[in-house]
Figure (cartoon, rainbow, N blue to C red):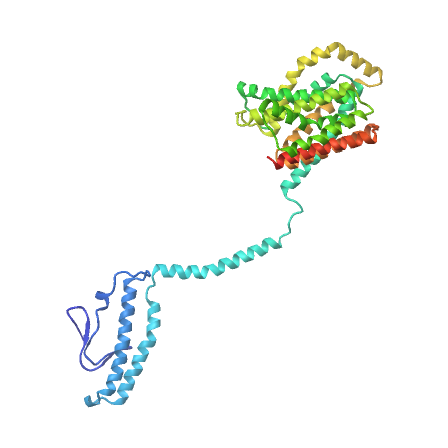
Length: 449
């Protein structure tokens, strides 16, 4: 065997056995394996891999040819048995080709593809196992958020009902609504001030411009509270809440007059049962007084004004830092208290408050009892509003409307039971119509928003 000038092996003469490979006896030139092999392949195989495979294949074919040619060269003195042996050796070479190919280095692309193909079934099996594990886990009766909202709404209803009853008890003992309303607003200051000073609640950061921006909303909040307290003192709680249900009527009217905002016809139609229901309830209200009617109506007007102001004016304006729903109500309450304090002192004043206090003492109330009534009423007012801010800030407008309507029904029924308020059939129908109209208005606003 010799090496030609072009790098190919040349075998001449008799066959020679070298290990498992049989060199053919015929003179044959094999194409240079490494010199003629391509340097790169599209499938990512290396040149060494491709060249070795080509060389082994060529050797196998040559050996097969030699096996056949050996029988045709009997004149050379070769026996038939040697041709058979040569053929058997060639077949061994062919059988060794696949095993030899597997020992050659494989291209990285092919190795990665095979690894991915093997990993995919395992990954799918793991995902299926995890899915079954999750499905087998017991699901909670309700999510944490749902449980939290349920607790907030429950507390809102209970605290609001308790406040209405407590406030009525205060006004029965001390018929000084301006003073009572001012004290109730004031109770927010020591409560939230303690939370801010101790770090239990993060303090809001307000500039003077922020306070000026929030001042109108604080004024309307205080006016809404004072109007409601005056109406409570002059009439029945149930009648005051029927009057407060007219808030949608004033919202529509104020929006059209001051902002030229008009709504779809179905929303206007929802105002009909509100107006008709309030009219019917007023005519058949056994405890009707004009003071209660006017104060309750003004409370609805100022509440609508506050809602419009918050939507049209406050949206998008910087209101300070750390103004969470709870902090927002605290700031508005404190500002509102200082706003109505001068009016409270001017209208009722120390002399009138002293007369009312003396009359209550003469009626059998102790000083501790009176102060406890005022303190509990003020605390309940602040807490129920804070809980309402937290609850309503996490629900959609439709949920807000439904829960607010249910709240009015609960308060009306509770006040009727506690104070044994006498109502007529037509008064009940009118109250129901007014509250139903308020619900339809809120639902309509959510649909046509």
